[in-house]
Length: 353
Ligand SMILES: Cc1cc2nc3c(=O)[nH]c(=O)nc-3n(C[C@H](O)[C@H](O)[C@H](O)COP(=O)(O)O)c2cc1C
Image 1 (cartoon, rainbow, N blue to C red):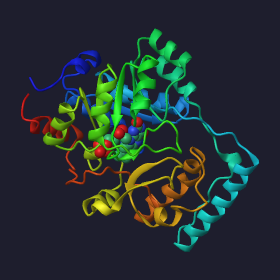
Image 2: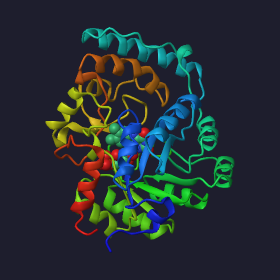
Image 3: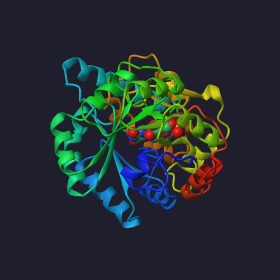
Image 4: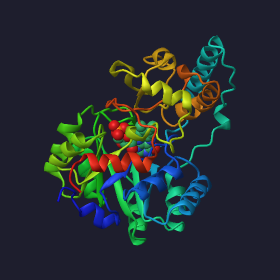
């Protein structure tokens, strides 16, 4: 039997394959389609408000009666100091000017317009909605939240990018750990936004497997049978795939973004803090090249909130130079089939049912 069954039994799914939460790209439809393939779908809630989170959870519940995970950003909110206020206004001016020079008219928010949400409100909403699987990145939940969630029988999946982070998660009672290799598309799950453990998937997964006992899910570069088998060999009992689904029917990417994926090369895939203030992997463009190493990158979530509108307007203009197209290092033919078909094909390509 190829498939390890620890995770499938705990999560009540047929295959231990997980559709990665991908905020901005994954959709309730994608989550439901993953469930149809016998996998675990993940609903990305990022740092949305409690109300917005509830809306998406209810939408997903209407589409599937199978289990799915909800995923949140457990982030630290930096204190608003005078220096941060000053930097915000400088970054706003710089980015507005850059957009204008590139024929994009955009009104970026003032600091006062920005609403920053804490994950604590989402935790309560998730329990009230009866969600039973919660995955998270950017840190660890506080002890009180862990206790509350456990009392409500919610299974917790934390994300690590180093052995040190894995040990912290395990010690605090997190049930499973998603080990995120440096190859992974999208945001790094790293706890400290300024620190970036650049550990490749092979080294990280085998090391974490040597140091912790909880079941491990691997994320980063899985896109076919051989990459999935490699992750199993190194200790993974669950397999999380993100980039593989970027061009799927249920992906929220626009046609011009899916088109860009078709001609992407290895050199185009970079790690950058320029859009959100946290490291994320995606396709290099004019915005990233200009902002990288500049003084105009604020800490998360302020940079993220500042650049949101620019990305939205650029999307409406089909402008690849000012949108964030997150993607991992495994470049392949991005399939435009449905999520269900892509996942079924992946499962089949592993070779053994
Ligand atoms: C477009 C995109 C958005 C992402 N957003 C999230 C997110 O909201 N939450 C999260 O935990 N991980 C997020 N990730 C990371 C994925 O969950 C996963 O770790 C990664 O996709 C695995 O590597 P792969 O892209 O090589 O498959 C995102 C990845 C991508 C490509």
